[in-house]
Structure formats: structure tokens, C-alpha cells
Picture 1 (cartoon, rainbow, N blue to C red):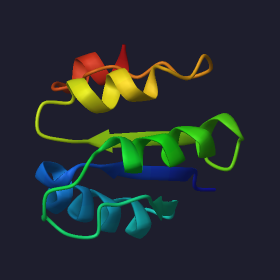
Picture 2: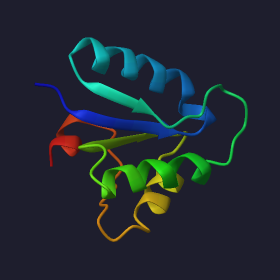
Picture 3: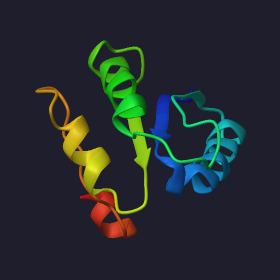
Length: 96
């Protein structure tokens, strides 16, 4: 059984987000894309807040945020008391 995964970020993460979304879907997960829909410049909080709310409201099991540095999206997601967003640039860090 797959997970319900919310995915989103900013324009810098657009290409990687789409590649990851394809892989997750192929692996049997249900993926909800919170944007952005292109690599045109966006305000990342417009995509992070709805994603975080979906995780808080149990509409998704997990959330994945992808942006240029990861800092802004993590800080925005962490405004929600139930969320613990962290930067994961290595597999070991993601596992921890």
C-alpha cells in the first residue's frame, strides 16, 4: 500500500519536483502536487501553506518540499505546530 504524499515548493525546485512526483507515483504512492506549475518565479509560501495544512489535516501522510535552498520552505512549514520540516541533502539525514 502506498502513502498519500503532498509535494510542492518553489520555482527553483520545479523540475526536480516533477521527476520525484513521477517516481513516487510509479512506486504506487498517491501524490498531490501543490505547485508551482512551472519554473516561473513564485512566492513559495503560496504553495507551502496549503501543503502544510493538508499534512496537518491528515489529507496527506507526508509532505515533501523542494526549493532552491530549502530554508524558506522549511521555515514556512514549521510555522505549523504539528509540522517538523528539516533540510535533507543526504540520505542519512533524511533517515534521521
